[in-house]
Length: 274
Figure 1 (tube, rainbow, N blue to C red):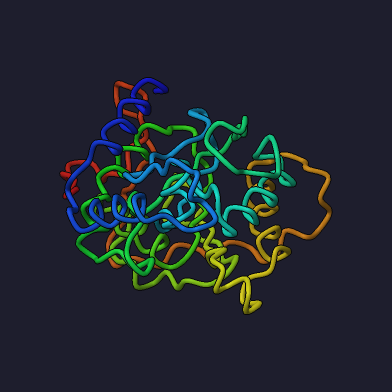
Figure 2: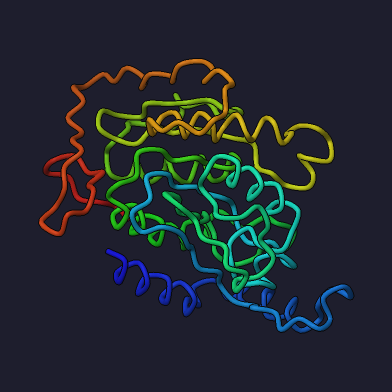
């Protein structure tokens, strides 16, 4: 699986499906921000990274123009990542609380970080079509991470992107029944990972107080507890997961593995639309 994930990340880096985004990433890498004039910007799609045996998948929106687009690693080099990695370190998912470059020695433990879009978008807003262009990469990552038991989505776009994949495989009839909110937990379908939604640790959300560090701590405490491991954090786990919405037809989703040992999100007899 590790080799297959490496091959997939190489494909992501080489992707040219969204000319607007590739041009934007390259332009930012040329103009740079004054504080980073000495940096050799990454300036292309940012790959996912983490533990191939991860039981928690963290799904963000897209790289920041002067964060991941500069450093070449998810949530690295900007304030969003500063908060996220402090929280992950306290929860036991990251080897250190600081994330400054892709060569800083940071290691994720039992966690894997990816994004709904892998290129830095203008205004932090990828178009719906650009998100759809990236969705097959996420779909394959889900197949290649068979141990995932919890999916944490950072922001509504990431939340919707994950639900769209489940819907495309027939695992859920619609995403309409799943209402986004902070630290909400959902059992989407029998056998599938617990879904936890969170506000994104964007500078806008954190500077206005919409998301505090403690609120993000609570999300990853819940994720850790869902994995059944003690972390030394004693806050209560919070409300129980929201059950999967009732379906007018029998739910036949199975959490089975194909001959290669990969998780399947498909209903028997159905062909993926992705």
